[in-house]
Length: 507
Image (cartoon, rainbow, N blue to C red; front, side, top):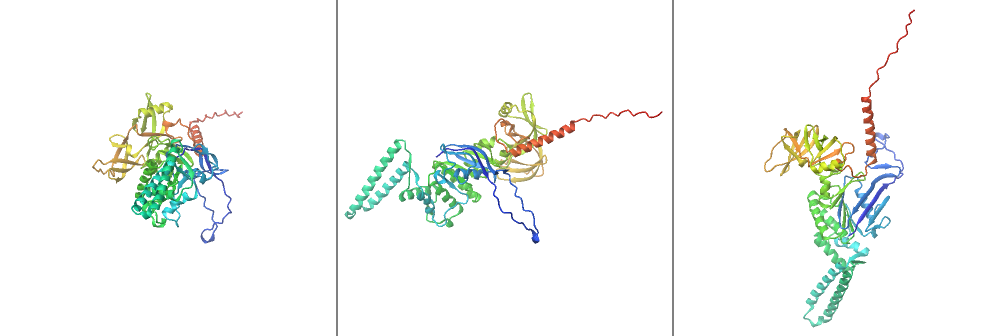
């Protein structure tokens, strides 16, 4: 296990001068090249893929980087692995700066999205390969387990040879090997008592086989050790890829979307296998995915990223219950959160949220956070999750367009104030068809989220420092200036023109 720290990590891909290509359309007509649009910031130095990431990963923690495609999560993982150079900032593993250290010397292992198995090797050979080429961090406890296994094997062989005087020399040789193993076990126990945990050395062939069998049993792939990757299913190949990484007992285990190539049922199964694996091995996990379900179920903490910026870091429950901005609230949670145009009111020292004519008092916790930040009454965006909306006699009115029966609940696709919304209604043993009806939707003041219309941040946590995309800041400032000019033009009163008296030219 190891502690990993990312301090102000920046990754910039410099521009590459490529020869100009000629583009021809139909009948050889020259056309303009297609310009690719992307959401990353472009500067004079190049394209910024990761912007000043600060992430502290505790020893033995399972942390998940999650976000849409192109947000910089895989680039961050590859910088930790050493496969990408770090443009700015420091990467520390166990307190040691490793920016310039080769990947092979970082004591990490990585599971790739494409499995990356050697096709000409068997499963056992794939798993044994990293143990052959590099010295390994061998724990004394592992060696004790291996020696006890050897003693048991020698004892079984000795029992088979017993009773025949011709085998006396072989039995004596086995006794000597057993005594050597016992002496080595005592040495290892003394090392552990002295506070030493492990040592670096190349594994013997016996140790390698024992380690491979341990990991194979853990991942349920003992029956496939003699097969080649082409004879395995997708889930079995993924297990082998994980086993090849785990067998090294690395300080940090990196996983880059390992389940994205699997079908839904197998993905759920492998997700459970990874949770079990985490409990069996002591290592630090950094897991990359675009699937928010994987992030919520696997991670001790999750890091939500967008356009190279870290949006929020927290436990899955914290990110779900208290999203720091509108993007996080919409990305985490299925189905997506509903948003309504509303107002934040302050009446008699208490805050209320109002949508149309429906007004609710906020919970004491929300009242305290808003009061602490001195939040003023303003126009806001009210966010409510689909399963937190209540069908009743009070609330905002909407029409039901589609009803999806999901078994224990019904998903109602509605039109509310001209916008789409989804409401989850428990069936409770009885299905009610709401299609074509107008119903009213209420919500609890403890389960709604209040977002600023200015910068999309959660008003309850507006005092927290965050790093924002400079393009978004510049756009907001430009919009604010235009709005101010428009208001100034509307409020400006034209001064009445005073007509000058005409000269009397008559005589």
